Length: 152
Image 1 (cartoon, rainbow, N blue to C red):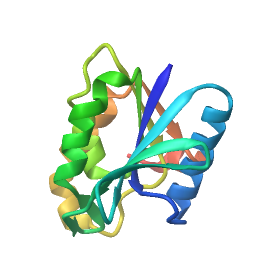
Image 2 (image 1 turned 90 degrees about the vertical axis):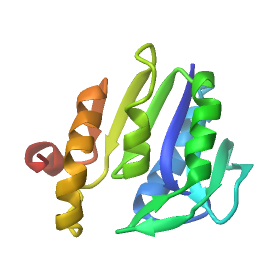
Image 3 (image 1 turned 180 degrees about the vertical axis):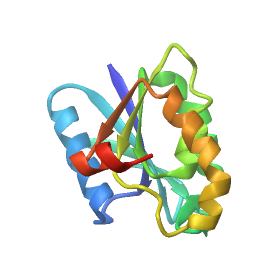
């Protein structure tokens, strides 16, 4: 089984979502599950970190805290067929949008780390895409009981 995690920042960034996903990737690979990371960085390259491979894609702009990268889209299209499962660490608008184009024979797992709360105006435009993404998901994993109970 091969899993592609769609994350935000590349190693060795130490945000909460990043640290969680790095630990998960390290653990999965130590147990024989091939798990790689597609993420945003300062340049486009493939690298390794703590037992897993990651594809760093140069960020072109950041729009309301959401990274945008042409290389992220290109790399996703290039490697998607290698993987059985796509695991999206959300919120990540570009990754969520790309997940709508994952072939139906592949599973999509969402790891719900946080609601989008600060970008209230732009979120109203993005919300239909996010809802379609969540409907496409085969599984949604919430990081806390509060998100499970309160996230719309």
